Image (tube, rainbow, N blue to C red; front, side, top):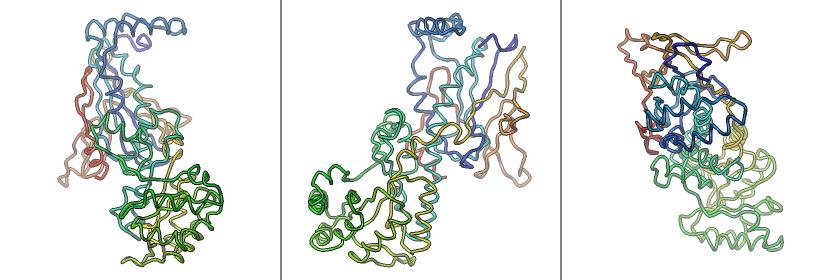
Length: 448
């Protein structure tokens, strides 16, 4: 790669940005995981030997001397500087979130050599976190309208562990969701938040039935299966979730709301969360809540919306941002039920149904130092103006919640006394983690 640059090149400066996509903002997260896992250990002679063997056989050029130079001069540590916006920060699309440049003029080629790994390390967790934040905004609007906003952190539960391509994806994506919420069944996400961001217990769950633990009682024993869940886990002030659509969800709701099972729920002092797992939620939920309200009754809160007694509902099948909005328009806007009655579980759509194009991620070189002078580098394809890239040694500036990407400090609003501040922190420099974020700090940044 080095020989493809102009003679006299000693510096390469690149940035990473979302060029647009499904959401008009991004919530930056995940770079620290990559740095800790992959960049805080030096390249070794054994690594270089393996690379030489494989790449030579693979048929691509491999200049061993350049890696030997890094080993001999820098002890195997990568001579690059990475700057990034604070993790958890929400920034409009089109802005530089990360910049990378070499710190040794002999290693100018290293900047773009890192592109594949660093871009992948950023686009996935940031896109998951962004989608999670987008849904959080929807849910918060409905809670402010109809219920208790303090319950927001448990309104979107991560059901995605078994729907991703790897355990590492579960950990990275699961931690990204926990930037915005605290409900998760993806325990790997809790572990990654702990490992890479010094979190305590970042996510929580509750006892919950699955289909096998209900259907193993047989259809004739369905009521006994439900009763057993309340017996085992129904404690005063506790919450227990029970999947109830293994056979007939409407008959199950009648079981819950009548006779001994109803009284058992009431006497337990617990809240039972009934989970349907099939069908069209806009059709199923109104019928369910009608049956449950006839059984348990409901109150009307101070905002004028109905809240069930003793029981709640969670929908976790086929959930995405659009289906959540459809459900809330029906249940809250049309039928007058508070969002306090509902929670959502999101699996594959949360952690797996995203890709680099969801937010049109790219890492591009914007400046190069050639023969001692920095020159602008950019692309501007005539066939797609959306792929035009930024020019120069750009950075990210912030003022009063507004962001702008440019080489020099913006002059906009300075006549009003507005001060712009560069907000890209140096997070990695020549083998060292230069700035570390705790998960507490990430969450605090996400709420600004």
